[in-house]
Length: 371
Image (cartoon, rainbow, N blue to C red; front, side):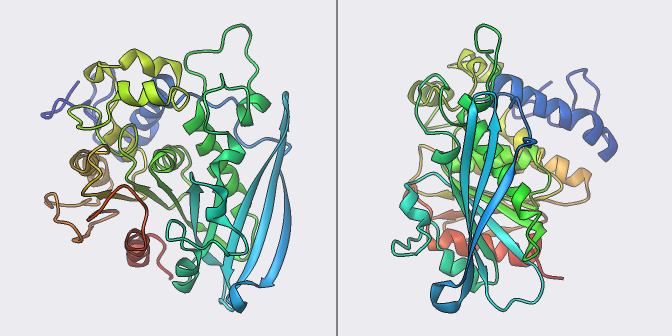
């Protein structure tokens, strides 16, 4: 069933039944949507939290000239294929009363971006700016979970946990799903740290990291706020009618990001039983923020914004108006709605101080608000 725009109707099940209550959404339609995304797009992880998961923490008080306590947490695990480690870096504001909310960043650039000594501080992850606003800044590097290369899923967590009889299934998890899995393991740690408020955690990603943040946030309801910055194709942007990067283009260039079934929709967007507004809807009623850049036409800002609009019926089911009657905004004119936010920034595909400030403004206004 499709809506007036030709998109799959987010509030109508595969059996044709209309979804009219929160109970029906949670018990039937939401699980159905997540299963469709597992089957056709991101793949299904063979493991959740491993029984072997442990945390080894090194604490350094007085970092950033006394402004923070630095924690470096080695998240260790093992599976049939061996052992693995992902390092989580945290900067926690000094002198805070009670546990603090957290911005968890999925770093998809070089490891130097998350330099624990801050010799290479950059706007892409402005830890100093985040802690100055009263938030803990946390980050992990995606390469430690799964290197961003097409090697037949032999490395990273795939090599540790994949055990299939015969050929790898077409719905097996791929790289974006592996990174999302790592974000949930970071959340496992955050729940153990008394300095942090695990009920007020935002997961943030840019570009491929933004795709990851959306999938992680849809699956893991412990994230209070999900932030997608310029995630484009198979991220925030609708696939149907999208300009710039198409399903075929992303599958051709990055065949390891999504599962085998997704390749069957190259040039066949209208045949997909899902579209990306349904992924955003799966985050409801939690907070979601999407950001775009004027010159990033490959990601298609109009399609990213349209996904929020098309996800709004689920938010309204919960009693929240989303972005209301807002139309596509001018640059530097953020829209702050009920449980939804959006901005369009001048410039190119990047993650800047302006973007981070808007994410934190949105968090201050409700998502991670201090009570």
